[in-house]
Image 1: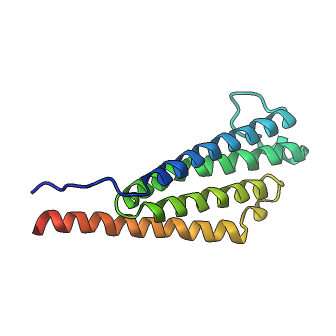
Image 2 (image 1 turned 180 degrees about the horizontal axis):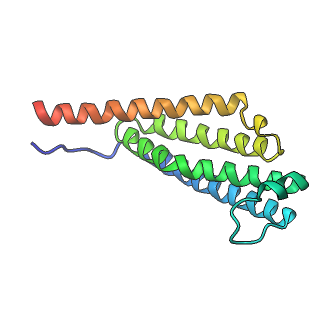
Length: 153
């Protein structure tokens, strides 16, 4: 039996949250570029090496900015997938959690680029990360429910 869905109310909010995450990536790219220039790290070098970092606080800040951006790039496919799956049933929840995650990543990035990696973890970042766990759980529930209904209805 085919599964049929209607587009849930609230889906534009999901689009807005997804667009905000694209703006987050642009923001992080600009931060990396700024710190790359200050540190004098030339392309294609992805990070300042240990010697450069020890000699220059600017190189350390560049490495921190680059790591914050890369960390976001590493996790964003999972964040987007769980957001979209959750949005099929709970679009307002998905949009809210993703939006809050984006805010948390801004705080994460701003703390990280101080050059003290410990400052990347604020209370807002921690709470937004818990939200991502919520997206994982809710997308698992939505998927499990759809599979169940496709098998038994």
